[in-house]
Image 1 (cartoon, rainbow, N blue to C red):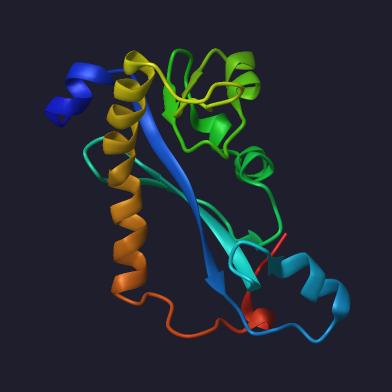
Image 2 (cartoon, one colour):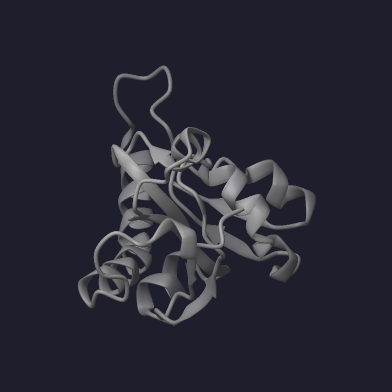
Amino acid sequence: MPPAFRMHFKDVRTIVDCTEFAIQKPSSPEEQQMTFSHYKNANTIKGMIGITPNGAISFISELYCGIISDKQFFIESKLMDLLEPNDVVMADKGFLIANELENIGCKLLCPIFLRDKIQFNILEMVSNCQLSNGRVIVERAIGRIKQYKYFEGALPYTEASIM
């Protein structure tokens, strides 16, 4: 385990994040609506990846329609079935899954929201920076998938197994 994780996040089992891949525009208006991502302003399919603290890929989800939320995606992916009590999942702010993880005896570690404050206090700022530095591992893995063009160009919609 990398020293930063050993020091600050020794209980982290997996770091998760989602990414979207452009697809060809479906012919059906209903399918266009299901796959349209406002974030990417295109028709997409979404995948979730889990990385261990040392950078190894530990989970790859099925692909879902681009409109699905990160929370719903996490639940549908069945990753929770693979977790054990006391595991910690590190994720981004969009993964509002703390209650779901708590129900199975696990914990969510994610950056805190600003909420009603104007700025973070020093401890919150340091904590968010440490979390961001830890999460960079999963961002790099997703970057490698895209950099080495495992999927080149817009994927044909008809070939995707989308739920």
